[in-house]
Length: 264
Length: 370
Image (cartoon, rainbow over all chains, first blue to last red; front, side, top):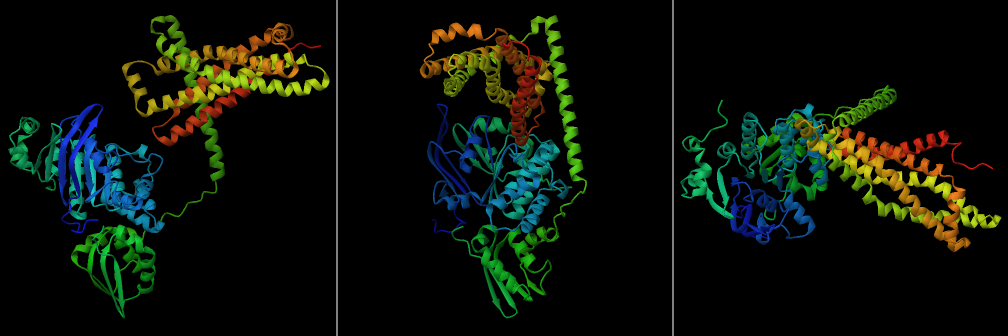
């Protein structure tokens, strides 16, 4: 147990992470810190191991060497109850939503609350509806099954489920993949708004430079098996490295005017 | 979690002072106690929330409900807490829609079942028509016969089922022979064991046994495969490329089953007769050579033809039913499991029904009457 208080402990800390998959080193001596309040974008080429890194942060897989600290503690630290309590401070949005297809939208969002225990059914109802309102789903959508939802609605319902337990940390895997530009901008606006309202720390993986520039307040570039650079978008642009120059070249316009998505 | 302040409730006369974290995670360990406290102090007029360090929608909801869905007379609330209350205020009082009872529900249910039956029948007929028209098309245009898929299906449904069907057949043969032998010995009719086993296994038990095994093994596999291909849009991709799923997926499976099943029936019946022969040898001391010699004399060869043709018909039925339910799968896990179960159950039921029809139609054939 840390005694320094939660404010100074990074939300996520990767120390010397090395990952070997299928006979290749994906990460080598990778270090990364995510501080409270960050909106960190994890970018990199295809196959650079972004999703693998995200899975390690969630605790779904373990690095070959090195350690992953979540709220200052290792995933394996503590008893079963402590490990689950730690996981419940984190919400995850999977790339394809991963809604339980046997449950309606309402039951999907209610699921973490019911599993948490101790809540009455007439408390769960307003909580679920408030989460649905938060992601701009209407109450009449509550009874729909995941198979009846459009791609954007699946993402929003899944986001509502990941927010059900009011997590401090939100991990998003390709949050805007498969959404049209308008919906994608709306989704980015939504996450920014939640970040402001709920004081979330957000880590997201993306390929989309529009999402990146509109959402991130910090960027970590994953290339050559490590975090090549981490900092604000401007700092990253200033880095003289062929990969970074190439990656951001197509998007020179964001340098001058970081878009403000809330403008009318 | 470690350093966060605990939620706390202080009550003093007409004052109620709250402090600490009023969040779901922090409230959970003391929830029962806090609920009870809130119930006691809910009528207190003055509430001071200024010491609350954090609040989430659940904390706000808990207080709002304790206050009876309205603000207490005097409320001290720092501006930072307002948003949590604002989020849940309009929703907290919502009653779930009362479960609406329709007096016609039983009638509706029967109606839906009947309509679903018609729906199934229509789909099945459509598939049957497509398969038959594919056969005609492939006869005209033999170049597009999917030999590879056919041989793969034959291998999967036929060759790979050989060990398990032989094992089951052999054991059933032993059991049947052993039990019959105990009875026959009482009457001194030992030699009749050959008649009983011969006709029973070749005409009836072999085909039905294999069908049940294959329905469980290959029927479920076909349904699940088609279902997953539907979920992953592979069926749509196939159609988009201009290849009919009926030609590439269903037709080879139906034909493969029609050919594999009689062979499996032959193989399983042989294994069952082998088992029966072994048990007869040990129990009744009927020599296996004598058993084999007299088998053709006591069992008319028509029984073998009936058994084999039953196998082919059962095979086609199982394959068609499995494909039918596979194509009905909708892209969700529930539908996948429901249709796979329905596929196996329907296939086995259909096999037994067709068997009964066979028994009626062939009642004068191959049974030596004395």
